Image: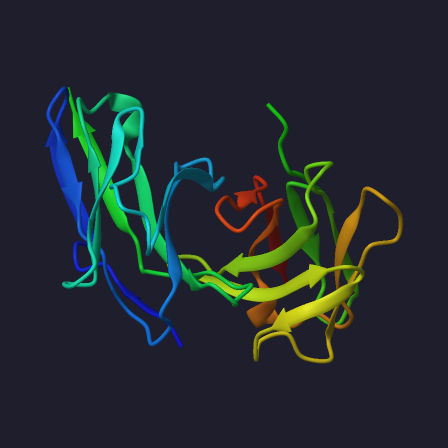
Length: 114
Length: 112
């Protein structure tokens, strides 16, 4: 079974600054994938970024990058140059290579201040 | 950009009634999922569907729930006799590959 922990229930960040959202995980699977999703107040779930456990490099997608530290079992999301539209709930999720289901963390609410 | 489409966006029903939530996954995707999110809580996996059969389901997905792919484009979740605790946002998702799983905008189900 997979377990995802997001310890920051809420964060404030100044516009144009970077913010790091913490995510730690626990799994017995030797191969797995890590995901980040954004959920704005409108409710939809938006895929942001994916990191495979055997990927040599940290994943990046535009202003989003994933700081993957396998030995520490952490997969922190970094949002650079925050924008007001980044205000949302952010979920970390993972699944084992042979799993169909994603296991989600509790989420972190990010509020970007002008 | 292709997207997962869910209808309706809101559904209000009386306890004990049957509801069908509808989804149109992205057209070339082969894997389909239902998740739900009770207000203020985690997103929870319900079921995954591949090759016209359930590939995995959670403990939540009991006999009251069923899924169907009635044609080449739709994917439905049926709740036979709704309970108050079924009130939640229900998300459909689909994926072509392992790496990217795309969600629809959700159906907010309210059971009265």
